[in-house]
Length: 172
Image 1 (cartoon, rainbow, N blue to C red):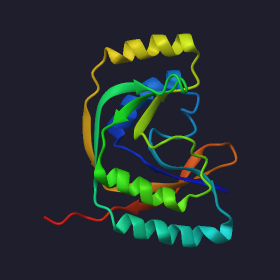
Image 2: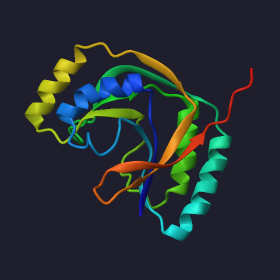
Image 3: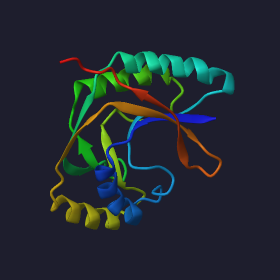
Image 4: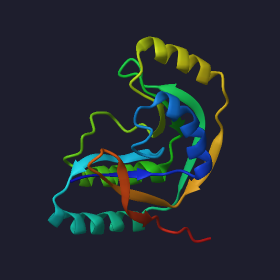
C-alpha cells in the first residue's frame, strides 16, 4: 500500500488555497492542501507498525514548526506547478531530512522546497496567465504547526489520514 507524510495547515489557510485549487488543480478532491514531507512510499502491511514507531521517535525529537507564507511561486520551467512558498524553518528542514531518510523508496525526484500547491497540470498558456494574476495578490500567513500526518492512498487515489504525530512541545 502507498503511504506518505504531510503537514496540513490551519483551516483558514486550507480554505484560501482551496479557493484556487478547485479551479486549477485536478487533485483538488484527492487530498486537502498540505506540505509534503515524504512523497508516496510503498509499505507492506507487516512493515507499517515499525515504520510508525520510527516516525513517532522522529516527531518526539523535533519542536513546533513556524509556517510563513509570503508569496506565490512556480516550478516552471521544470513543470507548470504554482504554489505558495513556505519560508525556511530549521525544524521543518530537520523533520523533512529525518523522514526522508526513512523513505528510501519514495517517489521523490526533486529537492525539498516547502510549499503548498495551488495549481498543477496546466498548459504553458494557462500557467502564464494564472501566475501573473496571482503574483499581483498579497499572500501573508503565519502559523505554528505542532503535528503532521501519515497518510495512505485509497483505491480511488484519494489520501486519508492513517495516524497523526505530535511534535515535541516547547518548554518556556
